[in-house]
Structures are given as structure tokens and as C-alpha cells.
Image (cartoon, rainbow, N blue to C red; front, side):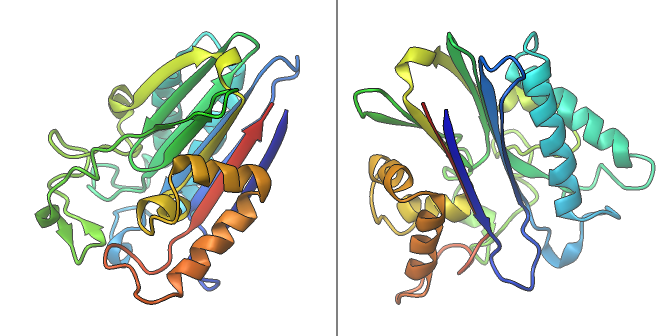
Length: 258
């Protein structure tokens, strides 16, 4: 197995709120990939004494540990328990009922010699490449399907659609949202490589249309995650600037190949 990861903040003066890890169990028969994209609250109004990086570090650490050590749990169960553990770590000091309590998008992939399992929650992306080269994107597209009226200044999502029926879901303080994730599995023999992208990296395809998902994965395969992020940054500097979302965003990409 060969793995590469890269992550860059939106701006040097701001902390990177993405989190990524690639892990393998001690027996060498499998592994796991975890990618989180923390949600930045407007004006830091989230009812929490902790930062988004604090939250994603704890949630990501729990996801990595449980996805590799508790193979008896489904990935949805792993996510639910990880959310519960993270919430317990600051339940006594913070208002976890606040609609903008620290939260994140989630991608998890877990594999052994027989099977690859996956979970995607919110707008980060998982790409799977078959041995023959075909690429499949695993997406939770609920946020993309929201009407424009649900967005404020094309950047802040209205609280009436966040973690609510008819809207979209993120990993925050409620373990039950794990049941909302897009999940599935494929035979491990049908996957030659995979990639996970936060939306700051996936905008190469989704926002700038510089190539399709197969092209995106080919950049990762031949040039690596750092190059994909550099390509995104170059596009962000080229007029016309994107009309949707932030000019720059934290960007993270992970690539695993067998």
C-alpha cells in the first residue's frame, strides 16, 4: 500500500480546520482513511469554549482508533461512538445544543483483504478507482441540492437546514446523525486506489470544472495531493473569481493505492 496526504489552510494567519489520517492495523491486513472538514462558525458564535481544530482533532482521533480497533462495528456505529466520545469531552463546559456547535464533514474508508467499507457525511468526497481505471465518486449531495435561498452571502448555510430534515447533516454532538451518512461496501479486489477530498480540494472539479473525477484522481496518482492543492490555489487566483463560496478554503487531499 502506498499513501500520500497533503493539507493547506485557506490563509497562513488562520488555523487549518481540516483533519486527515491514514492508518494500518498491526496485522498488516488492512487499514483506514479518515478525513474531516471542520465547519467555521460565523463570528465564532458556536456556544463552545473550544476551537474547531480542537473538535476535529478529537473526532478524527476517535474515528481512526475505532475504525481500526473495532472491526466488529459498522462505520456508522464507529461514527456514532466517536461523536459521543467527543461530545462527552466538552459536554460539561459548552452548549452542545447550539446549532453551530463545532462540527465537521466526514469521510471514512476501511479495508481488509476482502472488503472495503466507506462512509461519507456532508460535502467532502470519496473517489474509488477500479483496476480497469473507472472512477466512482461517493457523494452526500444534500447540501448541493439545497435552494439558493438557504445560503446567506453564498457562504453561510442557514441554521434552518443544518442538521434538520430536508436539509443536510454534519458530525456535531448528536450521534444519531451517523445514520444519515452515505455508506456502503465493495469487494477490495474491485478497488485499485482511493482518494478523499475536503471541499477546498474537490473544487478543482466541482467549482472550477478543471476536469472530471477521473481527471482529478489521475492528478493525485501522477502528481500527488500537493500538486492538486497547488492547482486549486492557482485557479483561485485566476479571474474571474468563483461566485459561490469563499475565495480560498482549507484544502486537504489523501490518496491510497495498492
